[in-house]
Length: 266
Image (cartoon, rainbow, N blue to C red; front, side, top):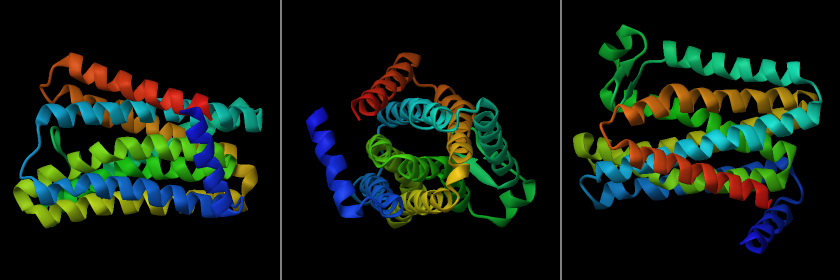
């Protein structure tokens, strides 16, 4: 398995010519494609198994939790040698997503609407769900871009793990919309979700390649943003779903171990 991962890294390094920016395009395109692949389910089936969707999202939460530390925060500490710099990035990431969560109108599938009350009246529910997805995917795309700027092998590992969990995430995003707004709308929302990750991956790599001295701050920012999304948004949503806790915990553990394996292998 580790040999296959090494070959994948060499392929990305060869195709990118060692450029972090080009590598971020490739890695971002991969995670966008896996999300779109999952969202294709909206065109094929009318509804998903809620238990399967819950386990899938808990798997995604486990991946994001490990990636925030092993792919972002710990490498940032090694790179900068300064805890205050990385801590500042983490705090900034938490604050940024908190502000988006507070002021951008969006709707969760279980907990319902969040954001300014005017947004509920002005936007259709499909767009509110789409905005929630973009808020969640913002740190995932940024994580791919910043890790590529730090190290292409680490960027490949991060993109691979996020891409794996993006397949069921694409399903979880697309099917609820497909059941209420139509199959095409469900697929397009999943596609939008993936494209948002691609854009953030390229933007993150571009920014921190040019301003390389700020890379530890940016990696801390992405890590803090992902931690906030997992602990404030995804996990509460999962445990409020009414599913058995054993399924949720098992999914979290599986995602945790997969990301830890990929990161340690590369």
